Image (cartoon, rainbow, N blue to C red; front, side, top):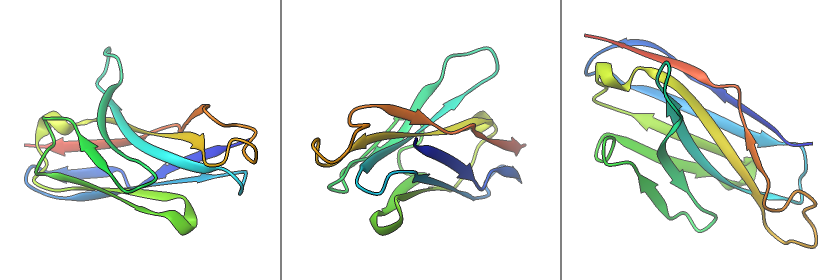
Length: 124
């Protein structure tokens, strides 16, 4: 089975920075496309950022220019550097890993795995 674990959440004041990490593990012959989502209380999860196997990144408009996603392919780890944080960034942040790579080698190909989330709180 595939495990996804986030870390790095916490509480900072507006204008500050946090760095989230997410590691996918469990089956070494799969490669993982990683992305970040967040959820406000009572709302559905919303897309924040993603990075594919070629390093191509995408961002929600609300975080462009403030957040940067990067990855360490050797360790199947993705990072989300969050700068110029705003109170409206307060949310639970979730990492998603989509199993991929060579279909013949990865029995979990195409499946999505979610972490349990890490809380980010920004005070004004």
